[in-house]
Each structure stands twice: as C-alpha cells, then as structure tokens.
Image (cartoon, rainbow, N blue to C red):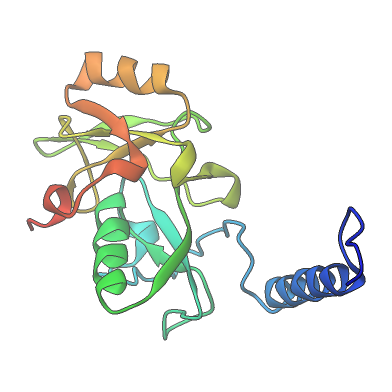
Length: 186
C-alpha cells in the first residue's frame, strides 16, 4: 500500500479543471450569472405585462437547466412580487434557481411620484441597477406601490431601507427571507 502525498492528486486536478471548463462553457452559452439590461419590449415571465411600462422594482432569475420559453435566460419580471411568485411556483415544479437579482434602490437615483391616489417608485432596467438577492434588505408593506400593488422595495444598504421605512412605513427583512404568504395574494 502506498502512502498518499499531501495536496491534490493528478486525477483531482483534472476533474477540477474539467468542472471549471464545463462551467465556463455554460456561461459562454448564455447562462451567465450576471444581470442583464431589461429591454423596452420585454414581458414579465410571470404575468405577461410589458416590464418597461410599469413603475417600481423589477427582477430577474437564472435557473439551473431551465429557461423561460419566450427568451434566453434569465427570466425577467415587472416587479419583486412577480419575481418571488415565479420562483416559488417553479421551485414546486422542480426548477432550481441559481441567482436572483432585484433592483437595488441603494445603487440608483430613484424618484417617487403620485399617480392617482398612489405613491409609485421609479423603475430601473439597466444591468448595473441590479444586485443579488443575498445582498439585499427589502422593505415590505410600505405605502409605496410598484407594478403589482404594494412594492417590495430592495436596498443594498440596510440603512437606506430603514430610512425608507421611516418615511413610507413598512418593515425590513433580508430579501432571502421573503415567504410565499407575503406574495401569495393578488
């Protein structure tokens, strides 16, 4: 019996290299984990609305081994509500989300305006406006609306989220902690 030497074996190095090359190949084929700019004519993969025609935060999700039927990955959404609803529904169908991005209102200059009786938040569709779910704190149940009613407003800086709550109500929580019950109505 031979003694094992410290460090990776040739087989481990080759297997690791093959895995990295396979992942790089997937990414060059359109399955990158980077956010994309949402085009003016992109429809929401959850509700079908034209994303650019509605206010508020938007989202996008990449899934392992699955893409929306209308376009290449990622799936695109007119609101954070549609983003979460789609994720929850697809997870029940066996889809595995790999990365979800939401508008990061700490990273953009946003506007609030009155439309009818509602205060609505501006939308931001450029790739640089998005941050991964894991990096965001959201404000839920505020007095501010987006495309699907009361907006779930994401912030990369939790202090910005707290300031938003002081002015517009609601409560903060990590974006990854949103539960189905919060987005199931409507």
